[in-house]
Length: 135
Length: 111
Image 1 (tube, each protein chain N blue to C red):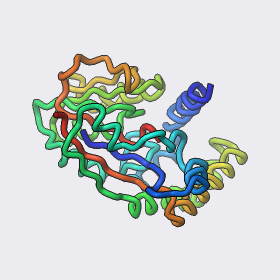
Image 2 (image 1 turned 180 degrees about the vertical axis):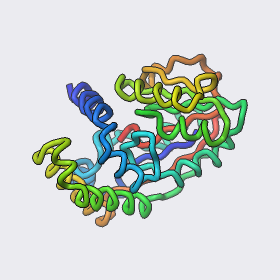
Image 3 (image 1 turned 180 degrees about the horizontal axis):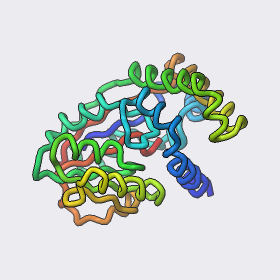
């Protein structure tokens, strides 16, 4: 039951994330504009990208990415391809819109899924990232 | 793989661990450790970097921004949810300052 409530809370949060005040706060706190609501700053996202040595031709999997942060940002910054996965449809829809807005549809995909049911073949990704997912 | 997570600090008493669970995000308490989970999943060369100081800065920034934009946030989410969020963030800050909650960066390689 608590998992369902948590998912509903996230649905509500992502649906609200278009509000101007939340975008202003996100920019000020995280230096992000991806409807992020966690604790990963842009500098930390950059660090993840550097540690994973992301580059064009690499496929990144971002598990529990919500609206696409930081996976979509890392793909835009490094040129890698990315699949973002989240069980909350409001977040997946927002990520999908961002992919279109950034004209990244040839190398970025936002799909619904959970960490234990990722819709990808084993061994098909080069790197995995997740931020503030199990907490 | 590289990931960022919030978890209870090491070597907490059961009471401290419960307090960390109440002050942290949902599901912050795990029955095992992240290094153990990584090893079980076949990852090696596990590195851990403590980012708690940065977490505190971010949490404080969220708290301060919520204060700065109080009227707009109340118009969006209502005063009850706004005040509850404020209480939760304060509780988290106190838990971080008490050494109960940490934020860590884990990096590992698949064998």
